[in-house]
Image (cartoon, rainbow, N blue to C red):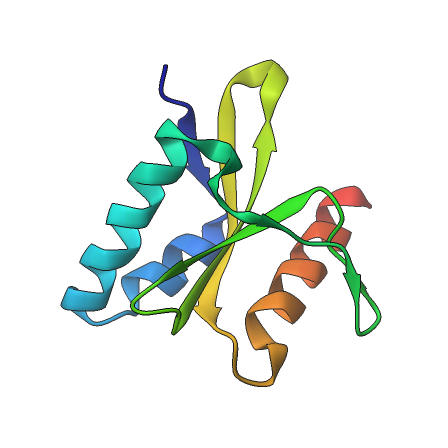
Length: 103
């Protein structure tokens, strides 16, 4: 059974900003995540960011990270952030977005 995919509004914007060929690779990976949500590696606490409960998956030969959370009780996957790892930017965005939602 496929999990429903929902996007954080900012993650949707990040995907829209990608080149067409990269966007296709990201959506291909998101489709895999919907079929096997446990595919991505678990994230935790790192460099002052707490992303426990979130996972990361790669696209475009590991140049793009997809940060997401599995919500088992609703059978869905929430995509939190999509972007390059450079300077830990994608993880910083994800941490900020999860903090805002928790407040």
